Image 1 (cartoon, helix red, strand yellow):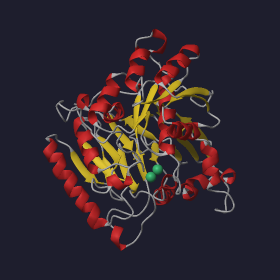
Image 2 (image 1 turned 180 degrees about the horizontal axis):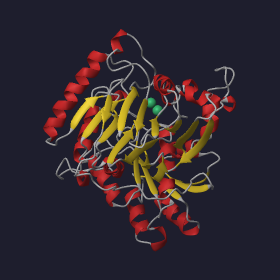
Image 3 (image 1 turned 30 degrees about the vertical axis):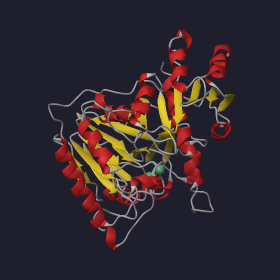
Image 4 (image 1 turned 60 degrees about the horizontal axis):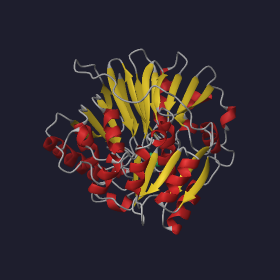
Length: 441
Ligand SMILES: [Zn+2]
Ligand SMILES: [Zn+2]
């Protein structure tokens, strides 16, 4: 399997002398399998040089499988310049997460409306198909592709591609689920010791991979000011990849404010940290033009995560019960979730919530932690003791960011744990992910 980086920049294309080495084009990675199948990961401005190379080959029709993590600009802006789509006989199968308010096709058509671009999507001569994915395992371009939701203020999928005996995992536009990575008192550096269920799932998804391509936009010093923006630090990536037994990590989605000198310094620090982790983890900062040939190795691990289901969350209207004893917070959450997808009910205390659940079982409970009278943990205890609510998905929403509170919540059986400050798109994406997973129960 051959992997080539065509765009390594996050947010906005950043050409110029300061970014010559690591590159200025936004996210795009080409994966070519031994049988010649092409998978394109994201379609930022890096898709333009990729397209130029594909067209220069001539000969056979081009069949591209384009996997979009999500549809923020830096991941789709190269698509209108993907020249194979302008040639009859070529094909492009486009994949992206479902659950956004607009269909994948309409989002791509939107950026090609006449106001912005001279050719409309419907005028492209190539055969283009659209596939909205949820979590699970899919067969794409001869590869086995697992998809799993990331933590970003938009529905965003990470992809694990397995073909030719190797695994490449693409996790771009993601931030840690929790401030603390490890459970207090547990041995650090092991998947089982990870505190937050979301981070643990993230680690399992990349376990044993030959190459992980991961967002590392910010330094640990910058991150506190950029929290909830949906990006990681090299420190998080190195620690989690080392715990997951990953062989090699490419840090990418470089910040537009970081020049080559700055990114090289991130690489140096990431390598020192990888050494300190004591695992044989090779880490580097991805640069445009970087090409890797991945060979199978004997210790290749079998696939470990993602249920082989493709249940859709777009088909029905879900019922959500929101419980918070602060009227302002309650109103804010209800406003955030209010839309076509959900029927929302409200409760202002734990007792009221349990009574309402007894009368009408919701699809998801959004539960405050600290409440006067019966708190969130007591509600969890009551729910998990009853057979009809044992599996009810619960998203705990709280200002309690500390390790003991987080641990207590997961021990009490919450499905997800979201801390303040959070952004509304981040909350809606996490709610959506909870509901998508609940289909599998
Ligand atoms: Zn991005
Ligand atoms: Zn994004």
